[in-house]
Length: 377
View 1 (cartoon, helix red, strand yellow):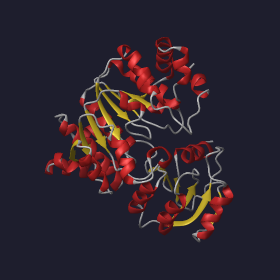
View 2: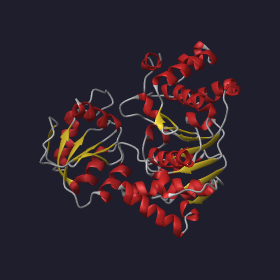
View 3: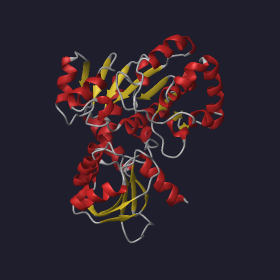
View 4: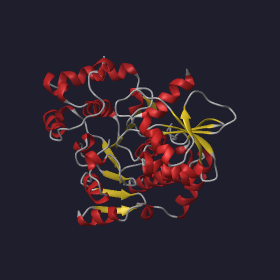
């Protein structure tokens, strides 16, 4: 069973062998059929951009796969096929096939993400388009071994510095080295991203190059129907730019089932959830909820800039409720409390929902996952 196999692999690694995935894929490449691949790289917005694009392509009539990560509640969320998350039967059938292709040594050595990337691409053997979302990397990412037709670049900012570098220039270089042919850039907050692209001699266009007056009117209408926050509208614009590049006609109706759960998603009238976990995500939330006051249900990994994140969100926070998460990567509660005290933010431990308050659940996929377990329990 796939679940048992993956449970033996750690989800996160201190060090990664970047030569392993290209080496393994080169040996087994003949077992894979390569559809038209749109690769998505960047720091924030990859998931929603991918789902907008994949949903539209599927609605138009193509057979489409969307590979995204991480998941919130079930692994099946990572492998979307023709409008639905993959089912367990298809997962396990293709897991057995992949194990028959790989040697035992290869199967054991591949990381969680590397193995599941190969699994997804095996499942997608009969589709026409694959929207393939990179994990945390760029040129060294497991998704970068596959030939693609187009790369979409969402906003690039600081995140995962231990793997990608500590400056925008180094992070952008690592990510943009994954571009194989043509790239379309979402509006970038950091001007260094364009400088890096020019230095690398990447062929690219900005998203605005593809959007005419009619497209902009459609984006406004789709955003109204789906109640999209400003940052989600930017991701929608990038997806539509990709359709224009591919010369695929679209209509407003093609996007009506394209919202991805966990992106400022309302659970009810007083609870919003968002899987964002970095400074760029906090800035987007502040822009969207600037006129709101709410209680933040929060926690953070040790390596995240949580003091800066909380500083950004402070204008819209009444108080913070720290949710307990059993993960060694989560910051110690005492240090989180010290930070909140320094920022003069009222805090306590999360216990339950008060229906008279408005809440934002934010901090990572793990925070949202833990909250949903309690909320749905």
